[in-house]
Image (cartoon, rainbow, N blue to C red):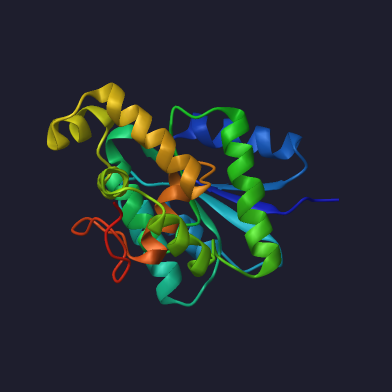
Length: 215
């Protein structure tokens, strides 16, 4: 019995074959496509499904595919795959409705965890919904410096850039970042980004509107 259908959309043949083998071995029905255009030509909604989509592809890229699906009202949970340098693009994808993003190189465990979460959201009929009241309370518990760190993480800046912008050491950034992850109860960077977006933490504000400043 299939544990759900997972569409793999990636222009890299080796990646498609590797992911398809992994997903099939885990009991999923894997369906692979070499382009976003090919996926859209064949896609038909199924009861329990998600998609793994590479952000960087020739022709229609992953972000455009995601925006097209949402524009058509197709609520397929999408996991986007990105290189480390493309985290800001992944954040845009999260704002467009992606349920998760995975940075290359990723581990098998990280990918399968993302697939599990995406299929759980499909089963529940939600797309990465966030408990807004809980998320706002968690943001409110952050110190002013931790909110600065959160804002810069949402932009997609690595620790070294954050350290430079805030005039602190990379080690201090690591400590604050760990505290932010713990206080926000975030399982991953993508989970943290999703919560931050939901409560209004964006590239030009250090905290969600109306929350005030922490001491």
